[in-house]
Image (cartoon, rainbow, N blue to C red):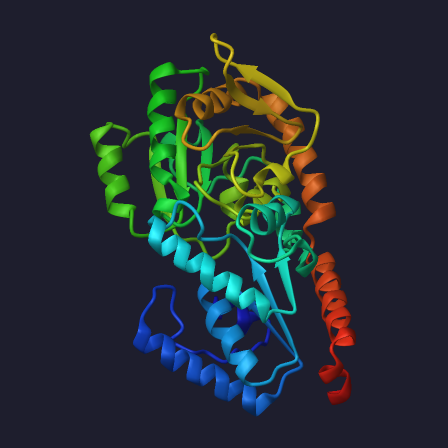
Length: 362
């Protein structure tokens, strides 16, 4: 994201040792550098994001005497990431860190319930909800009918867009399996294409999966995109197959771009759904998928239900258009960057006013 910072005239302090993976050597060096930075700058507020930075940053902030320590959970690693022992260790670490955290931010009501009730990270009183906020203007300006693919054989197809890291937690293999179902079922007259934006450790395995299923003409990988405006302008329906999510940016962006979507019912995704809800069921009465005003949800890992939801929407372009417009109104109202900035500033002042040490410093 350095390109983004430079475009906005921001010069971040970059600590290369602070990486995603656990490395005791690098993590100790990262902690030392952050602690020295905090001791030198003497900030009134330290606000951390994600598990690794949240651990190293909050410990450094406590030892540096920073009066207000805030942490935002964008998602969590308490299921579908690691084995039982490792997961319990991370739970213990987060509970300990919570005791030294002034306020914990969840990005949806569902996530707050998950963290406070299911995983007992901290009492509910220590949490607040601040939904994500993004610069949606370029996406809100999209008019349908763009073509990111620039390939004649894709231009007449109904295009399904997948945006995300190609890693196990995002479950991109399921998106390819859904495509295999759709190609066999042929739910509509037009050809169907899956367009995948993103890179990650599963890229080669996914390419092999596509080859084995003989889907080369139906799936295209366009790699990591610095801007997704053209991508969203060139697809007709968004899909998200994740095993675990907080509030996925990809769905917010898709809604802002005027797209309907099909997603798995995990994390805070249900908080994105707009009523009314219509339940579709299998022949034996079990739920198949839920249809909402702006999209559809299937249970995590349910290829039959997910595929049925995609097929249903592919057959009705007018419904997709209505759902896309409903999602666009919702995203514009709830997820603007202006609302995020105002909510965050209000939280900082609230915490500072409650901090005797911060008041003395001010």
